Length: 199
Image (cartoon, rainbow, N blue to C red; front, side, top):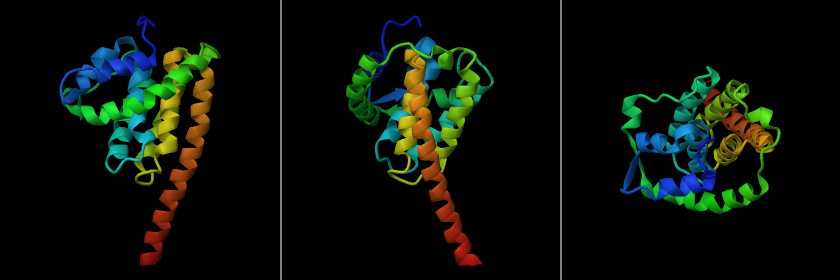
C-alpha cells in the first residue's frame, strides 16, 4: 500500500473534509489505492451502531455493488456518476468515525501483517463473495440492532484487508456467521408471521 496512513488516520482525514455533506466521489478519491478496503470499512461503520431504516438497506445495497466488483476481480472499484455525486451527512459520518477510531487504534496496536494470503490479490474474489453475502444479510437485517453483528463483521474484514491481517478477516467471518444466523431467524419469523395471517 502506498499510503503511509493506517485505517484510523484515513478515517480521521475523511472526517476533517470541509462541508456539511461529503460527496461519495470525494471519499473514493481520498481513499486512492485502498478504495475497496476502506469503502468496505466505511459501509460497515454506520451499521455498528443502532441505526433506523433505510440506512442498513442502503449500506447493504452499495456494499453488494462493491463486493460484486471484487468478485469479478476488478482492480479499482467503479461507481456510477449518479452515486459519486450523492453525498453523506458529515455529522452522521463523523459520529460513526469518532466512535470507531478508539477501537481501531486498539486493533491497530494488535494488528500486523499475518496470514497475508487471505488478503492477497488472489483472495480478493473470495472475499468479494464473503462481503456480498454479508451485504445481503444487511438488506434483510432486523431494524435498529439486527445489523450490528454484520456491521462489525464487514468492518473487521475491511480492516483486515487494509492491514493485511488475515486473523482480522477470520474474526470478521465469525461475526458474519453469527449475524447471518440472526438475520435468517428474523427473515424466517417475518415469513412465518405473513404465512400465518393468510394460510
